[in-house]
Length: 167
Image (cartoon, rainbow, N blue to C red; front, side, top):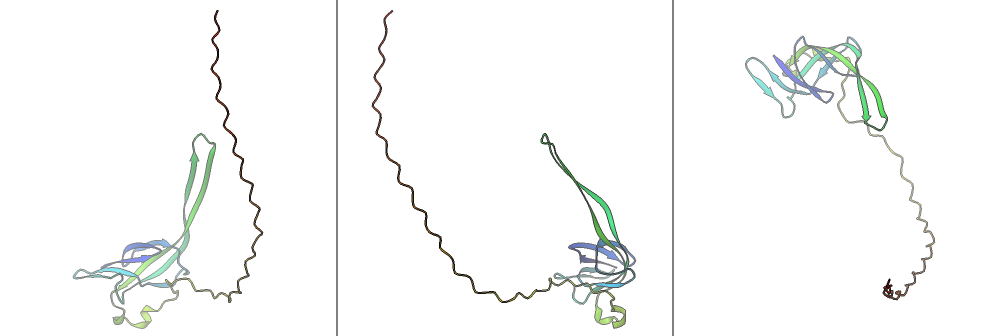
């Protein structure tokens, strides 16, 4: 039996007993977590495909450790311009062990699904903004005087042809 779950903006194919390295979760080592965004569950006899997620399906996991991944170097260069920049980045990761795949949580005892760390996938909390003050009236600036129009110059008379000099 395997399942496809979605976490951290990525999809992972997991089965029971797998060790999985995912983006950092807000859970400590040893805590149990539930992944409720299950996209697909495959058993030997049937396949459950979600639209977009399988209803009442949960993948249970335990946090093994939180750590930083390998350093990734970012190097920028513009040739012949003496421009070189190097930056580094280490992604924070969480290693989890998949314990159980539950296709239907209604058939599972409540104490088995108890979680110690909640994975909240809702939007960020809305911050209440204070009432807006009345807008200030716009202050009009005095208009600058326009420049006087340019005078048109009269056309120059055409030049006379040069006289040829005999030698």
